[in-house]
Length: 161
Image 1 (cartoon, rainbow, N blue to C red):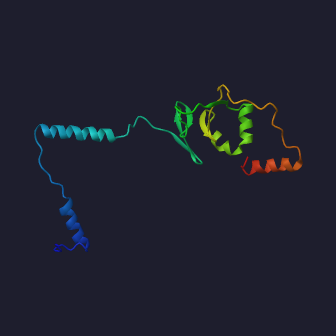
Image 2 (image 1 turned 30 degrees about the vertical axis):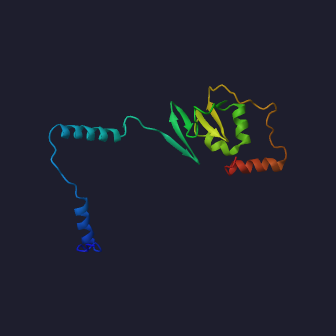
Image 3 (image 1 turned 90 degrees about the vertical axis):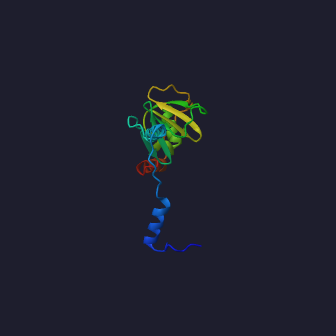
């Protein structure tokens, strides 16, 4: 066991590191040097991000959305495995789903052009989107008792509805 170097001191560790990790520099010349230089240039360029392309991302709660062709798309959406339900932004069906699932509101507020996965179902939402989600046969009734009206008002004011 060679204990001639004192690695328990800062100076000793620095000296040992300098000796152990010092690169061996060999002058390179000829075709091998040119090939190595070309490889290093290709690697350096490959690691560089394309500055012309930027990806816009929105984080809402536990979901992340990426802007693709003017549509905010949920990162959980897999176009190969999912067929989204069409939903027109601002339609009666849109508001019915929102009243049935008020917790979806924060996701639906991302944009009026959106693909979102909610409860395992993908929805494509847009102002000119053809609907494949059907409206209810009966209109959604407003609360009738004063208590129900107060409770709905309270939920709206507190942001829970």
